[in-house]
Image 1: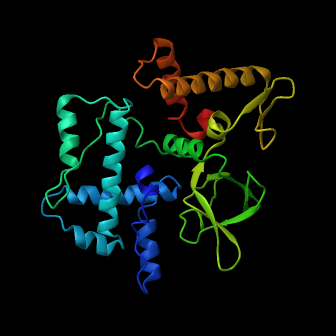
Image 2: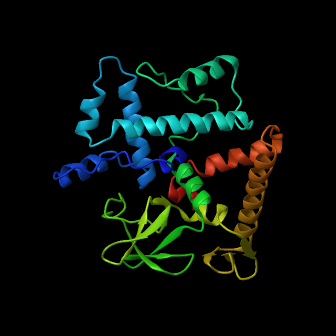
Image 3: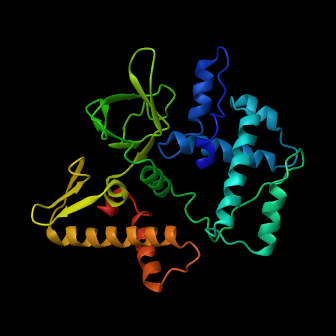
Length: 283
């Protein structure tokens, strides 16, 4: 996702065929997220590149994709992986390090580096990926109001960019994170790179929460965002969960090479269970 944000869109704007181009983009739709949609197109391209006899250029032409931009995303991703390894956030064995070095060599016979499965746990979990995106972008967050959207940071009314996969959604989500806002020729403000996120992720990860036990309200950043909780037991449980998860994240960022304690691993297992269930189960 970071590499995608550091590059231009791989979907090309060609003259004519707007409907076909939009349908091609929507065919990669994933997780009610513009970023995951691009990621889905990128992973499909990587699969084509790694398939003997597959025609990369035919695939890109059919799906209105730029092979050069996709290669650029791959290069940036590899550079970021090297930085993560150097910082100690990702530990690789000797064979994996050699594979990463080979991936840094560009050319026709380039090889792709695959992140080890032992650490690539949640790439297929759209809820967790979108939650982390929202945590990273906050306070760039939109809330659904009627048929429109409001920027929670400044109460500005915004619309979604016409190419967003969330623009014509039949059941739009309550919350959307976004990467940036630009003013269109129509003078409307369009949000770009939006991703759906659920209540629990906003309450758990975003801003500075204040847990008001008696009123049953979770207030984030001085009432910028408010959530009502059924009873004090649920409030206490959520406050404890929120505090523990944030403490773990803080510890990992401060000292990435330190191993997690048994208790910290148990809290992360609870996180994994909560974010692997359906919306109704979480409630």
